[in-house]
Length: 104
Image (cartoon, rainbow, N blue to C red; front, side, top):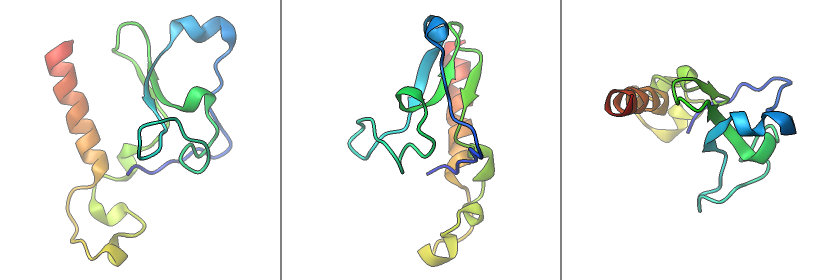
C-alpha cells in the first residue's frame, strides 16, 4: 500500500526506447494481473510502476514509498485502529537494500 503523487504526469515510453528499459514493478489487481484505473492511477504505459536499465542499478519509481515510512502517514491510519509504527514504504526500502546487497 504505497501513496502516489502523479500530479499531471504518466509514464510514456516511445517505441524506440522500449528496448532500453526493463519494467520491474507493475500496477496490478489482487490477482496479480494488469489493472486499469484506479489500480493504475495514471494510466501508465503497460501498467508500469517502476523500471530500471539493463544494469539494475537505476530505478525509476512512480509510487512514493518515501511518503509512507510511518503508519501514521497513511490517510486511513486512525480509522484502522492501528498504532503508529512502520509504514509499508519503509519495508520497500529495506527490501531494496537486501536485494542490492545480494545481487549487485
